[in-house]
Amino acid sequence: MYRKLNIKLLAIVFAVLLVITVIVKISDSRSGDRTLKSVLVEFNSDDVTTIKLYPKALNGGQLTFEKQTDGWIVSDGESKYRADSATIQGIVKQFEKLEPIRMAATKQERWSSFEVTDSLASRIVFENEGDVLGEVYVGKFSYRQPKNNMQQYNPYGRPQGTMNTYVRIADEDEVYAVDGFLGMSLNRQLNDFRDRTVINSNTAQWSKMVFSYPADSSFTLIKQEGKWMVDGVLADSASVADYLKPLGRLQSSLFMDKMVGGVSHSVRVEGVGIIPFEVTASVGAGVSFASSLNPGTFFSESIDGNVMQKLFVGKGMFLK
Image 1 (tube, rainbow, N blue to C red):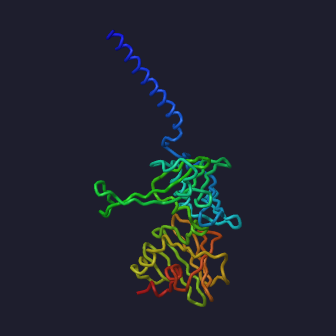
Image 2 (cartoon, rainbow, N blue to C red; image 1 turned 180 degrees about the vertical axis):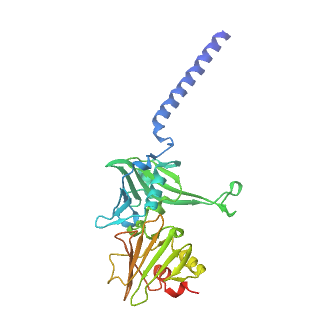
Image 3 (tube, rainbow, N blue to C red; image 1 turned 90 degrees about the horizontal axis):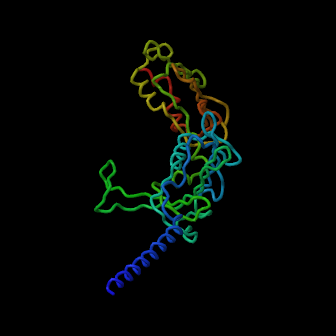
C-alpha cells in the first residue's frame, strides 16, 4: 500500500509540474514580443539616400535631406541649400544600429509620458530610393546621477551620469530607452543643418593670395622660394604665420538670401594641390560675403566681424 501511495504522489507531482510547464510556455509565447530587442533599427549608412525629419521645434514642419555626389542638400519644401555633410552623417551613424538599453513602456497610454507621440516627438525617416529603412520617434531625454558605489568618471576625473533618450519605432507600441541625447541633434531649425563653410583648406599649401580692395589698397601676397613677399617686398614671416593660422577652417552661421550691393572686396587663394577659391564681400551700409567653396550660400556680419576681421586685412599687417 505504501508503494501505491508513492506512485500516486509521484503522479500528482508530475501532473503539477506539467501544468506549470504549460503555463510558462503559454506565458512566454504571449510575451515573446515584449522581450528586449538587440537592435531597434538597423541599416547600412551607405544605403541612405534620403532623410525626412520632422523636428518638434517646427510643429509638424518637415526638413528633407538628399544625398548628392558631392554631399547633402537640405530643403524645407521652399528652398534648397547645401547641408553640413558631417552633421548629417553623424545623425545617420547614431541611428544605423540603434540599440536599446531597456524597455520603458509597452502600451500607447504611456507614450505621452515619454514624449513619443506624433505631437511631442521629433520623427525621423531614413529611406533608400523611396524604400523606408527605419522610422523612429525621438522623445524625452533623461539624466541619471551616478551611484556612489558604481561611479563612472569622465576624462577630467569627475563622476559621470547616464544620459538616455526614449524612442519608439513606427507602428510599434513599445517605448525604449537608448544611450545618448538624440533629441539635441534632431530638434533644430533649417539653418542649423546648413553648410557654414567659408574656407576649408590647408594653409600650408597656399602660395598666393590676391587682395582686391577699393581705390589703390589692393596687393598680392606670394610665396617665393619658401619666403612670403608683399608686392615684391619681404614680408614678416611671424605676421604671415599669425594671419594664416585661423584661416584654414573659417565658418559663419549668419546666413542671408543674397549679397547686398556690389562686390567691393575679394581675396583669391591659390596653391599647390588645392582647389583655387575666392571669398568676395560687399561692404557698405552692411557687410555681406560669399565663398566659391560654398556656392549659392551668402553670409552677413559687421565690419569687425569674424570673417572680415580675420581675412580682409591691410598690406601693412605683413610688413615689419
